Image (tube, one colour):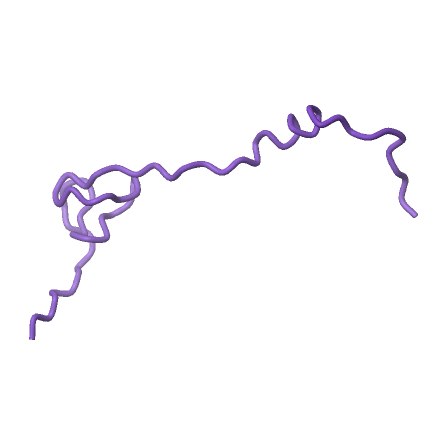
Length: 64
């Protein structure tokens, strides 16, 4: 059987230990070309551009 702590950990000490485990909101910005929301430092999923140039060839929508 492993050794056990002699006393209960205080809630504040537990909170300090877990303070870095919180969830963070993703950094979302507007695409300068199509104004749709996208993640920072990622190519736009709507128009396929990143830093002013096209980096992803998106298929044309089929209107038939």
